[in-house]
Length: 191
Image 1 (cartoon, rainbow, N blue to C red):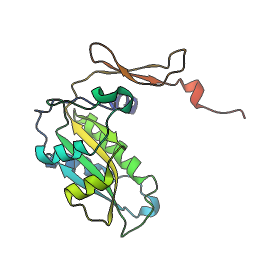
Image 2 (cartoon, helix red, strand yellow; image 1 turned 180 degrees about the horizontal axis):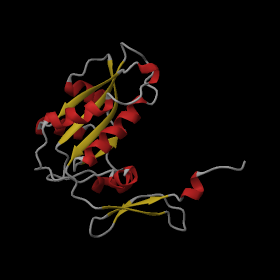
Image 3 (cartoon, helix red, strand yellow; image 1 turned 120 degrees about the vertical axis):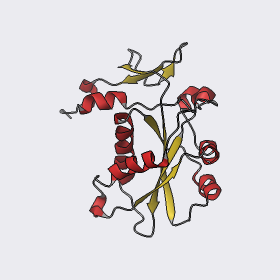
Image 4 (cartoon, rainbow, N blue to C red; image 1 turned 135 degrees about the horizontal axis):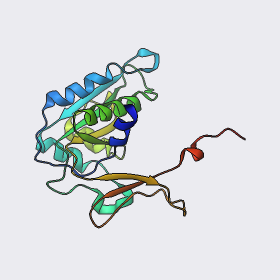
């Protein structure tokens, strides 16, 4: 059921770094995006795949993780993802990628959960630094970075507390708590 898949699809920030990922597995996740809608059916997204530790380290250096958790939000050695997918927009086709990269990213994450993996969409990216470090041509715009791996952290969804804080946090056992707004706050039917 889709709802169960969505409950398992959390923003994981700790992984079993020793879990091997194959580039073919990442390619299978990208294959899912071919089935997604695309604005005017232009299909301008391209994907850079990495399962190489040295390349993964470069990607990690150029991304920001879990701002609300501070330094503890960045995965430590042994807890880093085994792979990354960088979503690129091909500027030779268009300068406006609409929401295609968001649809693709969510599809990749849902696909990863379905095969027993997990991931994180990373929007905090040093795009210039990453582009130069990986030699990505200028006609590609880095849209998002997706970390993929075998999650080792427990993430729980809870109601937003009475004080209204939406901030996620980790407890002493490193359980990651994510407050969510109730449905009654999301639906607006009176103005």
